[in-house]
Image (cartoon, rainbow, N blue to C red; front, side):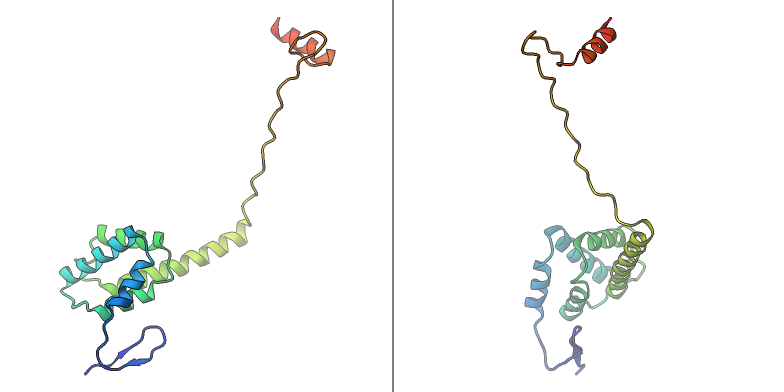
Length: 157
C-alpha cells in the first residue's frame, strides 16, 4: 500500500481516507465562478491526459492554492484552458506551480514598484464652488463687489 502524506504538515496518513468533505470545504471558500473553472480544468486534465486524478490529488491541488486570490486563479485557469495545455500533457502539478509562481512574482513586483514609484497620491476632495449670492438691495444676481460687476458687464458687451 502506498503511503499518503498530508500536503500541509507532511504527516503520514494511514489507511484510506475520504477527502470529499475537505474538498467541498476548500471549494466552498471560493466563488461560484472559480469553483466552476476548477472543476472544468480538473475534468479537462483527466480527459486529455488520461491521468488518474484521485480525490487525494484534487485535495492536494486545492490545499496548495488555498491562499491565492480568486481573480488570479481564474486568470491562470482561463489561460490554461484557452491555450489547451491539457492537450499538451500538462497536469495539475504544472497548473499549481504556475499559480504559485504567479502569486509570488506578483507580490515581488508589487513591492519593487512600490519602492521605485512610492505610494500613489492620496485622493483630494475637490472644493465645490458656492453659488453666487444675490445682492439684497438691488436684487441682481451679481456680487456685492463693484469690481466683479464691471468685469461681468465688460464680458457680456
